[in-house]
Amino acid sequence: MYHPDKELANDTQDSLGGNSKTVMIARVSPADTNAELQRELQDRRVTCESLAQRACDAHVEKDRRVMKIESIRNGKSWDEIESNSHEDYDLVKSYVSKIQDLKGELQRMKKMIKEIEEHRCNLANISSTSDDGAQKLKEEYLQKLNALEAQVLNYLGCLNSEWPLPVVSVLKKEQGDKNRRVMRQLNNCRMRFTKLNLIRYDDHLRRLCTQFVQLQRKIKQESEQFRLWKVSREKEALMQTIEHELEVAVRVHEVRSAYEQSNGRAKMANEIARLKEEADMMKMNSSSGAEKMINSSSTPLLSMASQLLEAEERERVFSGKGRWNQVRSLAEAKNVMNHLFNLACSSR
Image 1 (cartoon, rainbow, N blue to C red):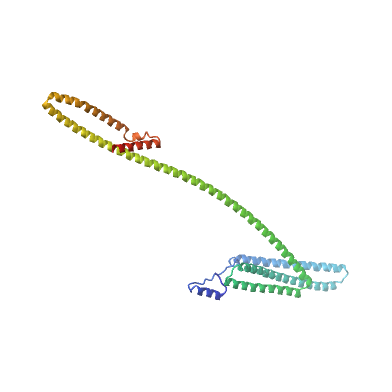
Image 2 (cartoon, rainbow, N blue to C red; image 1 turned 120 degrees about the vertical axis):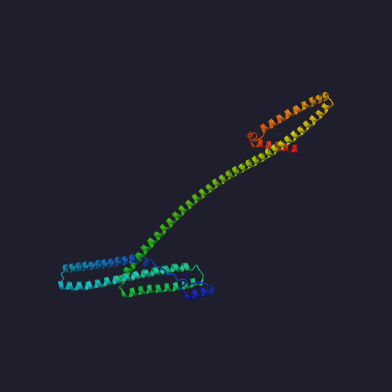
């Protein structure tokens, strides 16, 4: 931050404990960066001034000749006309030079007034802050403002004392008219700028409203899509869980039935072997009684074997995934699971 007061910068650096660096920033004006344009503008200004001077000289020459013609018409001699024309020419020339100087003074006064307005704007901006640096800058701007106002008053006093009153009044009137035109143009520009800002603000507000509505619609669509995706994922997870439980239950049932069948076959084989031994023993004892016993015991064995074959065939038909492919709904799957669990509990 640039501080024109060196003591304030040193105090700020000391308050920071010395752990700071002072940076000097060079401010470059557009005139320095655009030197070529500035030179071209200066050349054009000189050309315009020379053309204006030529126009003034031509106008003075025209007035002088008109005065000569009027004098000749009034019956004056040529010597009197020449002497009077030289006097009038010198007077007009002095007035023209004074008018040119006065215009230059007016330009300088305009620059001073512009600087005064800039200093007032800076004072208005600085008045909102309350630190020491701002107060010092405010005091400096006040001093510059007072000095410029004093210079303006001095120029006005010089104009009133040095120049004739009609010329000064005419120039003041022209300056007042120019100031009024400038103020009128400034007010028109301000009104146009205000209207343009209002139009831009309304357009920006409409764009924000449309963007907000579009964003709300997009959020609703995304939330609805997320809800549907979540429901589908939950449904898929539930179906996978049910299929896994069904596969586990079917596998347990298959293992258990295979174990029971192997145990039943082993028991039946032991029973058949025991019966054969008893039959052999009874055959040795009595062939007739043994034959009757074997005949009586073979019939239940045959029936048991046929029942076992039917049970194996039924289990083969209803075992595996072919049975579960017949399940069409979640309720049927739940019923099958309950039935399997009941069978498992009853078998235990």
